[in-house]
Length: 172
Image 1 (cartoon, rainbow, N blue to C red):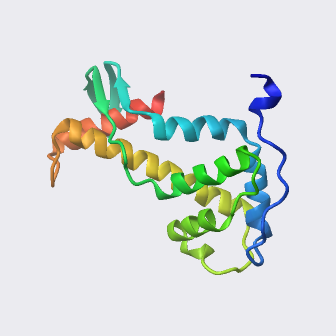
Image 2: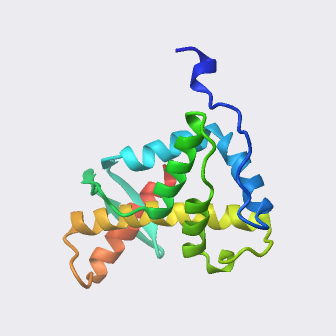
């Protein structure tokens, strides 16, 4: 496969959903952000978190994080990530992506984008990236809780260990 075959085809433009040029311009940029393709593949294909033993500080307390292999649930609901993946996949194969489903998912996470009022592109980008990161972290949190045996209400020790594992993951 040549480098040219790996690159997405040039965008032909997106349908205007009505006063959404801020959205279309943001999506045009994201469609050409190659590291986003790598990330979106990783986040859904990742099946486990591999934790190496280490020490982290949580609330001014040292926490010893043990070696661990934490299984991530498959089929976890990631509606915003899924909508973004579908949007990028359409673009990648040379189709004109339908911008509506992704825009609707953004509006679910950030109600300020409901309707068709003009908005700031940088705020849309921030809400989109925050939303997909939140879905990713919830998937991690659920797996960590399952690994630690947390059911309804975690104990203080489980909370500290969960925060320790999260802290470890954020330092990678």
